[in-house]
Amino acid sequence: MKFANLYDPLTTLVAMVVVSLITSAVDAHTGRRFVVEVVGGQLRVQGENTGASDGAPAIRDYPNSIHDHWVNVTPAPGSLLGPFASAFLPDFEVPIDASFTLLKDHELSLHLTRASQWADPPAMPTAGVVPTLTPLDAGQVIRIESTGGVVDTTGLGSLVLSPSVPPGGILDIPVNYQVGGHPSNTIHLLEFTLSATPTNPSVEDVIADSDPIYIMLAPDGPDKLTREHYASLYLEEYLATVGRPVPEPATIIALLLLTPWAVGRRPAR
Image 1: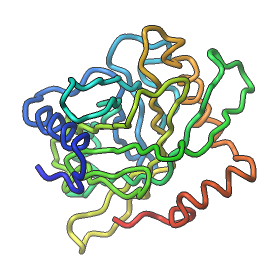
Image 2: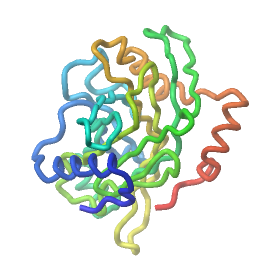
Image 3: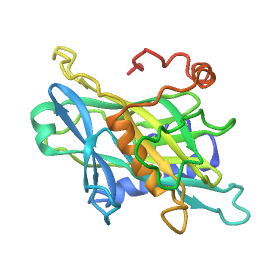
Image 4: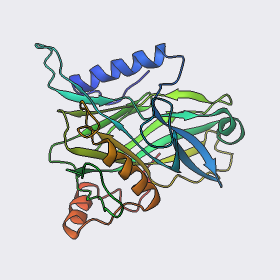
């Protein structure tokens, strides 16, 4: 297993945990996940929750959007690591029907295109609330790791979820998300697209990239209000059914400065 750009102790520590999970797991993680599908010639991911009910349908009524929660970690004294938060869900699954008939022998890649946050959301948003999404706080970096590499919210980039999808499907593609500190009162939003490219260059590339995929990571905490659970469910459905809200002009400028190359451009594979 190779992880690119493991340049600090936190990333190295979490990468070791990811490798351990990959090499020892025989079943998919229980909880929130994305099931990769091809619908009308276009990739999409269907959010599902295989764990305890979270108040929303186990199979979401909408595609391409789901949340999970950070788990706060306080390293042992002397470890040289500061507090951080980590999440191993949502991860990805490629079911046998999609892989055998459509995605077999395709490289499956996840492209990080943008990151933002919903700070101080209402505890229980009501219909009509428009989420206020702003850039991440200065100096805050979220890293995303899988067997296909590491990307972060400063450089964006791509992860290879599978170099060549096998005909039998993939039960579990582990992904780890990590951030410094213990987030609170904020829902972090990561935006991706998914692409599938034939490994044989003579095969025509006919599967369209996905629409934006939204992953929300909400705080850890002792109860659903502290964990911004209801706001996360609201944001899930809002993004999937209404779309990303248009930021105020000042926020647009900040986002353009943060990710100038990502606007209107498909990430390199």
